Length: 238
View 1 (cartoon, rainbow, N blue to C red):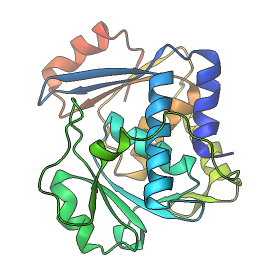
View 2: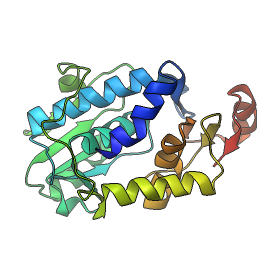
View 3: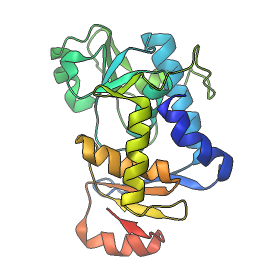
View 4: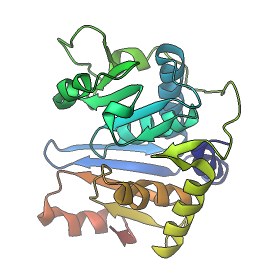
């Protein structure tokens, strides 16, 4: 079973319509809320894109040069749905997923597969003027189905994150959820970035492992966080 299935399947069975990820960007005023079902649909679309267009499959390696964002959560979970390993070093990756500002960095890594660029635009607009060979995520993902069926099961021994096996990573994030005192009743306000493995584990994966709901704030305005904690009815702050 993939890490994505381990994390999302229990949530989809228990509370499919409940908000799972609420994303704020204090720099732009953006707010978007995704239920568990909507999140799973985005994950499936991205997984179909990665598999069908990028040939990402078990044993493949994907680097993610993206900020903490709801689309980042979708592509991370999509990579794991495909059985890929997420690696921190772009030069070790088959594919590099990046934002507009890091296209040159991704290309400099010379991944053997290619580069997939995400605009992270709230209205789904793509990126104009991309270099030849760089795939625009926003343009391509909409063409793919919102259900994903893996071609083969992902073994627990398959590497999921920087060499850590899927089963071990699932166990570790469950332990982190317990250590943070998270439960399915919690709504977690977080400003953590996910580029550091410990923040990815605590700020995203442990929240999902607990079945909790995440309120992720990018470019946080500290003067708004206390009020947002109250208005979003959060119970935990990271």
